Image (cartoon, rainbow, N blue to C red; front, side, top):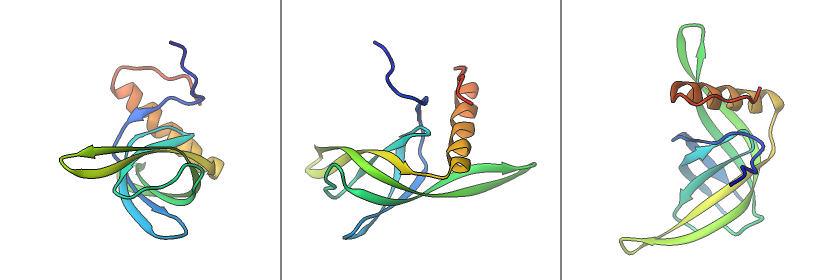
Length: 125
């Protein structure tokens, strides 16, 4: 199978806030790359829905651990409904449609660091 993604994706739980025209949803990522994120939410969000997003990512400033707040815009490209113990949830695939290049580079650094820790090597810079 040939990988079609432009950026490597890692499994990772990062706090995430999604804001649409109707409500805010607080959730967490299940996986992330520099081009998008995958998460599970409790309410239906239709494909092609535009969202304001706030992602909270671990960062390091020298020897101090910090949290980097990334604000961007995304578009839902996938929304799959599933049932779990009688509860309906939705798996969302979200493409980052507007993101500062410096924030994209921060995500690339985070992903590459996680890949190196797991023994995988990434060649995305």
